[in-house]
Amino acid sequence: MINVMLIDDHPVVRAGLRAVLDSFGDIEVIAEAATGNAEVPAGVDVVVSDIQMPGAGGIEVTRRLRAAGGPPVLILTTYDTQADVVAAMEAGALGYLLKDAPEAELHAAILSAAAGQRVLSPQVAGVLAERISNPEQALSPREIEILKALQTGASNREIARRAYISEATVKTHLIHIYAKLGVDNRTAAVEAARQRRII
Image 1 (cartoon, rainbow, N blue to C red):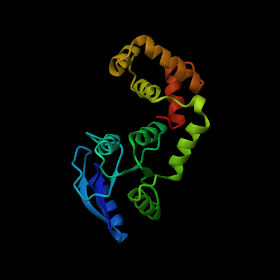
Image 2: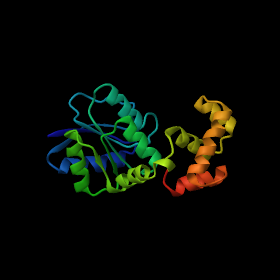
Image 3: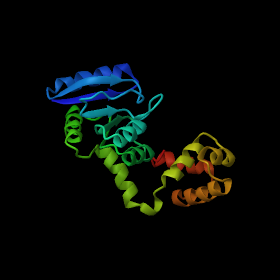
C-alpha cells in the first residue's frame, strides 16, 4: 500500500482526488492539507501537491521535503507554463501532471514516484522538450522572474528592488529577454511569453 498526502487549497478537489486514489486499492490517502505550510506526517510515501496555493505552494513544499530527505513530490496542477514546470523540476519534484490527466495516468504516476522514478505528463514533457530544443532561446529563471514582474506593470526600479539587483542589471536582462523572444518592448515581451506558455 502506498500512503499519500494531498495538498490542495480546494476542498472539493481534495475530496475528488481522495475518492479516485482510494478506489485504486493499492493507494491510501492518509493526510490532507490546504497549504504547503502543513507538516507531512511520518509514513507518507508520496506527496501530491498543487503548485500555486495561498501560503507555501508546491515548489516550496518540494524544496523543503527534498532538503529534509522527505517523501517525493508529485505536482498535480492546472498550470503548464514553462516557468512553473522548470521551477518545480529545479526544486526537485519527481513528477509533474496536469489535473485533466486520465485516472490511469495519475495512478501510474504515483506508483512511479513511490518507486523513485521521474514522471511527466505528455504536455509537460513537451514544454521541457521545447526548452531543451531551443537552448539559445530558453529564458533563465531570473529572466522569467523579470517577465512575471513586467506582467504586473512593475517599473525597472520596482523590479530591481524586488530582485535585489541594480536597475542597470534589469535593463541588461530586458535586452536579453527581448532578443530571445524576438520583440522590442515590454508589452510585446509579456504577450510573446504568454503565447509560448513561458508565463
